[in-house]
View (cartoon, one colour):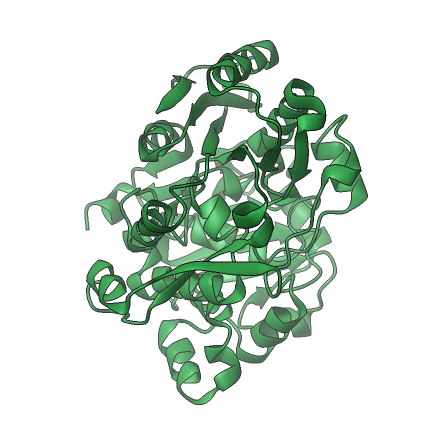
Length: 424
């Protein structure tokens, strides 16, 4: 059922309209005595999920008993991040998701189904896992909140991914990421009907249909002045609410350029991107737009690590971003990589497969560290003088020396492709 929908490519939903729309849906849903909210973490700050969670607390008061940020494999939120993202919400309501230990397997999807949806690429079974608070918390309502946007692992982010990956366990996250990587991200990004989504939909239908899960989905884009605005708000309890949000997201967040881009410069906000685990969105989201032998330059002042999880960071440093053949070969003889398939998937995602060059300009990591994982290195200060984020506009820019670049101020907000790539 869809309780509320509002959105279009040129819509700018004001804060008061967001509140009115949300509360009109909540009146239809009912009060409930025990409510759980599952929002994204600080890495999705611009999703407006923080504002929505604050409004949910304002509406439910003491009946909102638990807030479980969908960390997935990310590090827990800090107190300052919680205060900034979730205004006026008591910190004691927040729970920390432990993806290695605090999960329950609610069901297992057979290998035959996995093989069917991946075209025979993978035939292992897949465990549907959730944080035990989601499955055993006894909540009257579970609100899964977040932004729908093109995504490298599943095609379009959010909906039940927020639960089965955002509050999932080690094995489930690892295997789902690897399914997407082996199937091929360029065949999935910007699409709703993908192998990983089919797994999650199977899990929703067969394993958690008894839970009262309501999805609050947003679509965010930039207006003509470059400001981030809320383009869509969709609230419902089934797959249709996701597909409607995804239809709008493709119109808002997908940029198609006439010809492949020779030089792309990406800025990674230091408050959001501190690792290549997150920052490699600069690669995922632009790869379909990049020209063969093109150059991707990533300015990352907050970059201080590769993986937010200590073990994944170690694996990235050891194996590097060397492409699909090298990663699959490494999997054959290294049990540690087999046990961390999400890391293996990430290594595939983070490589250009030798098609274009990737230059990282980190704020904290050294040249040796950057080059050891198979990226090129450039000095951040020098590159910021050449490509000043304060002066560049999103899209094409002509530099003083005549050089033409394509600038992206936040790769997490969209997907870019050349028309040529889409026609292949």
